[in-house]
Length: 394
Image (cartoon, rainbow, N blue to C red):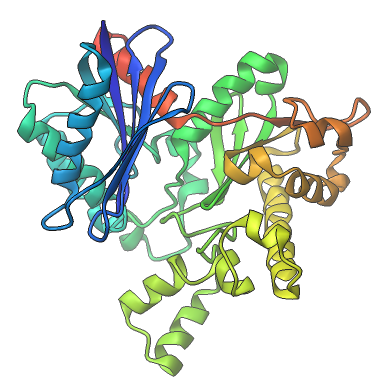
């Protein structure tokens, strides 16, 4: 029996899953190696979520290549003879030219390396794992699914900054991210409510990273993330949209350099920065500290305000879909966002929302509201299976 490995590499971790290769891939194993560069450790769970392995790993020289080797080793131990026939990767940036998943070649890998300046915190780690597997298993087919690809359907005006054309021509534009998640959720909405999926939908991917996407008939029209994954909504540790003059002020008055600005934008702001307590919504909800309440209120305010922007791009709103960690699990956030969207005609069914049902809008609501769990790993596995079978990846 053959299987597909799905990999998602970050700066200090590699998340992975193994699926039985089929028209509808079936999860076999799921795990992660975290603490790369510090205190590495591995964890592996079966399809039911039962932990089957936890292992401390050596620190010395343990980089992404070593983590990849370890991942393949521990995965093989539990696959019971199921051969891995392909590896599918989440690659954050596909630039303006890649609008669909594809089979990786040396030439494409080199081209993806040219996008490192566009995603310096993610792209190098994605490519490190791809190259490690290519070196160790040169005959194993590998595919790339891009976080930016789903948004290539946006009209040019939605991707353009009001900057001198030279810089736009050099690649400074709105790319959008979380595209693999949006593609999966849009597909699930079509299965759950096909008539709604053809209309004007805003998908709210709310987690430690957060964004909104305006979708019409399953295609991206606009998104809150832009040139980087730091734009748009307030997030766990990212500030979201900020007056660029603030960054100039930080340079002039506080002596910030490029890396300090990067740290400020990506790691010290958001829920963590405003609350001074945590980036975790669960911790903030449990806190009585006024700063925690203020952080939550700002998070909700930014979401509601940007939903208005997405509705404007769509010319109205037929449905709002919640997904990702906060969107799927925090009924209070869903209720507060819905209350702020009352002017659009959205009314929640409170008991359905508390239970986390798929449809959570009230019968009289003019706007539908849904909770659809995302599954980026499954989406990558499906697309990889299509490519390996030779089906068009459109």
